Image: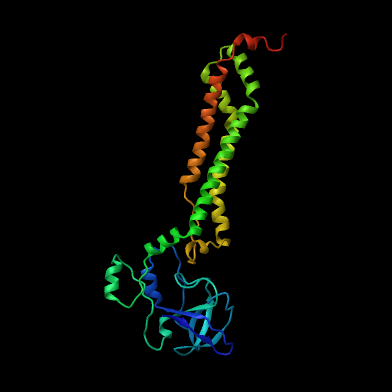
Length: 281
């Protein structure tokens, strides 16, 4: 049951959510949200959880359907699926003078059409429909496009770093490899030398980049409110996927190997007698 009530004495009119917590937990079992803990009652009243906007308080009187005395047991940041900001409080189902409900949370595989038949006066919203609405929102599309563009740009910067490291010392490296070829250096050994030169770029930057990409969401996620991108619903899980960062790191390593092969093929054309005449007129 949801509604708006008034706190006696202060005149504040917070939103109230009265739920059967035991059944609520059963319905949300396995969902990526945490439900609050609320005891049945304390001395002189029924326990309640209040939003940060209401601030800490002890015992207070609330007028909603009928007067009731509540004890603020703690603070709750959001009621998943209902409120995530403003003044609201959560109370147990027993606070109601009579059992009534204006919101039903249903667990199972029943179709929306069947629900509409069973409860014709209800407005039915499924998790899949809510997800599709969030994904179809223009803001969500803009954020996804921006993230894709940034990812491609960062991959291009990493590729440019490899190319520049090859180009910057190409002339000196080619001269050295040509001189070493006169001493019996093979193509495989030449590729290994080039890879060893590029190894710090790949071995240091790629793992560090993956570690930062995986660690920053866990470190900064609790302090970043991304509920605006989820239709106002609270978001508690910021665990990133491994596919994108690992794929980018693997692509960086493959580019380094391809660069080493390309450089070896180019230096192979250098005339050995020209290398031997280096430094002479």
